[in-house]
Each structure stands twice: as structure tokens, then as C-alpha cells.
Amino acid sequence: MKLYDMTLAPNPRRVRIFLAEKGVSLDMPQVDIAKGENHSPDYRAINPRGVVPTLVLDDGSILDESVAICRYIEGLHPEPNLMGRDPLEMARIESWQRRIEFDGLFTVAGVFRNEAPHLAGRAVQGDAPSTPQSPEMAARCRTLLPHFLAMLDRRLGESAYIAGDRITIADITTLVTVDFAKWVKVRVPEEHANTRRWYAEVSARPSAKA
Amino acid sequence: MKLYDMTLAPNPRRVRIFLAEKGVSLDMPQVDIAKGENHSPDYRAINPRGVVPTLVLDDGSILDESVAICRYIEGLHPEPNLMGRDPLEMARIESWQRRIEFDGLFTVAGVFRNEAPHLAGRAVQGDAPSTPQSPEMAARCRTLLPHFLAMLDRRLGESAYIAGDRITIADITTLVTVDFAKWVKVRVPEEHANTRRWYAEVSARPSAKA
Image 1 (cartoon, one colour):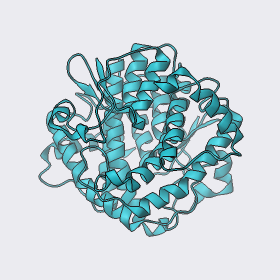
Image 2 (cartoon, each protein chain N blue to C red):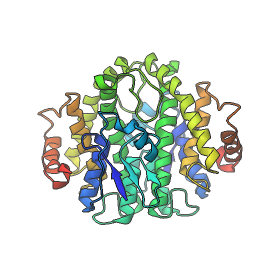
Image 3 (cartoon, rainbow over the protein chains, first blue to last red):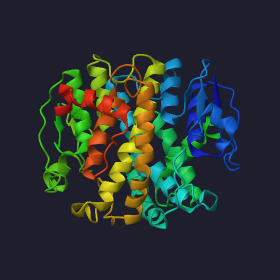
């Protein structure tokens, strides 16, 4: 089993942090997205969609969706638990993890993919048709981010971690989102004391450097 | 336990079909989104975000994210299995279910929310700030849908159902997506025989009327 990875990109980082929290190490060949290696014939032979991260199983089949990769790892290595121990906890964690993705991670990506000069003509990832960047979309996402960050600070005022009293996949997605937001020059406001308390703790864990 | 529902909307339909496949019936109070009931003080007291579906548990706490609600129901009522029996199958189903969501359901929603006259100023759902519709975004999503439908037809040429040889949550998300696309006048092309074979079968199941 090996994980095709790209150190700088946010989605592979989610999986690396998840693996580090589990204490699992995998062979992780690097794919240089900036050089377009993910669209090379060699990489397309591994994953026709050209996305990272991609987990290649021992039978050669792949999983190329970050949360699905985490779900598989959770099943193989149940401890420490990061996705819930019973149906209700699993549902609560998934609910938070998806809310952070939809309102946070995807919104940051909506700014980044529609603004970054090297993504001109590739505003939609994967094997989508060439798509021009949309300044209207980038502007909308920039308008929504303060709303997301305010929600995050309220949540972390009522809960030690995103989905409850221990670290879960929802915290990993949030950490990656907050760090990714810096790429588009959006930062947690000084007055968001709850988020700053949480960020200081979660970003100091060894897994955050994975 | 009860499920706040809105018959016409795609996300509540996902949960209703899931429940019907499980043979589970719940009290389902209706929330009239067209009349803005989801933003009324009464409904906001139940769910401050004003979204449906919302599952209210017996302790009054809520789950308001469709796939998380399904995950909880799957845990309470494991048979028939719709989300996977072992770690790899769970991961494969989740991978497909998310791909259909991101490339299909959210893309249809990107057209609908940015075009529907009654959503002017509310292009982003939930408790997001008032957001103007983006014709640029609607146009982009319209351009991407044929790519999604072509992928779908290829997939259904190699597999009886979306995620393998039996119906799963991924088929439910796909059925809802294909029907939702009709709202924006996008239909499965006549020549997509694989999708048409699958659609005829899945839409004829009693659950499709739930």
C-alpha cells in the first residue's frame, strides 16, 4: 500500500495528519502538482483523474478521495479513534467534518482556485474540462469566509474540540482549512480567542508537521 | 426521533429514500422552504441554521447534515446495508458517494441556486449572509454537467450500481442528482444507455417515491 502525496497541498495533508495521529507510516511517493506531474502519462496510468492524494492498494486498485482514505485507515487501525465509536458519535463527527469542509475548506479553495495565477484555465480540479477562473466566485468566497471563522470561534467557545471533547477528523480538516486560508491571506482574527486557544494546541501536536 | 422534511428538496429526499430502503418510518413534519418557513423563529428554535433535513433526537439535540443522518440510521438499522460492510467497501462507497456529490449534486445546485428567481439574494444556503446570485457560477456549472453525466455513463457501463454490485447510498445520491438536474433542464442524453438502464431500475424501486 502506498500513498501518492504532495507535501504542500491541503487534501494530502489531511491524510498525512490522520496517519500520523494513528501512528501509521506508509510509503509516500511525491507528485509535483506545480510542475503538472499529476497530469503526466505516468501518473494518469496510476490515477486517470490526476488527483492527489491517491492510495494504491496491494492489488493495484486505488482510493483517491481524502475522507474515504481516512475511513479505510480508521477501519484497519481503529485506535486512536478519530471518526467515532458508536452510531451517534460517528454521525456527529461526520456532520462537523462535512460542515467544516463545505463552509470552510471548499470556500478557501474557491478563492484559491479562482485567483492563483498558475491555475488559470484550471479552476476546477481533477479531470474536469479546462475552466476559466471566476473573479465573481473568488469574491463571493472571500465574503463568506468571515462568517465561517465567526461560526468556528463560537463552536470552539462551547466545545474543547470541533466535534466534542477529543481530537477527531473534524479537527484535522479544520487545521488544514485554517492553514490553507493563509495562502489567500485570510487569517483568524486576533479577537477569536477560542479558535486561537484551539489552534495553538492542535498545531503543536507532532501530527501537524506530518 | 423526528425528521423535519421538505418533500420537494433534494437533500431531504436522499434521507427519505435511505429510510425507505431500510424500512424505517419516522414522524416527518414538513417545512415549507418556498414560503421561508425554514427561516421562521419557530424553526430557528429547532435548528438555528434553518436547513432541512434536520433529525431531532429524543434528547432534543439535532443532526442536520444528510449523510451524517444516514450514517446514524445505518448504525441503528444495519440491514439492508447501504454504506459498506468492511473497511474497504465502506471506503469505496464513501468515495463514490462524495464524487457524485461534488461533481454532480453540488454542480446542479450551483446552477439552481444561482438562477432560480426565488433564491435571488440567497445563493448560499443555510445561515450564510445574503449572497447575490452569480450568472458566471451558474454558467460554469452548466458547462461541467455534461462531463459529469459522461463519467456517470462510463461508470455504469462497468458496474451494475454506482459503487459495485448492489444498491448503496451512492445510488441514492445519484438518483436524486439526476432528478434534481431536470429542475435546471439538464437531462441524461438518449445515447447514455448505461445510465438509462440503471435509472429505469433504481427509479422503479418503491423507495424512489419516498
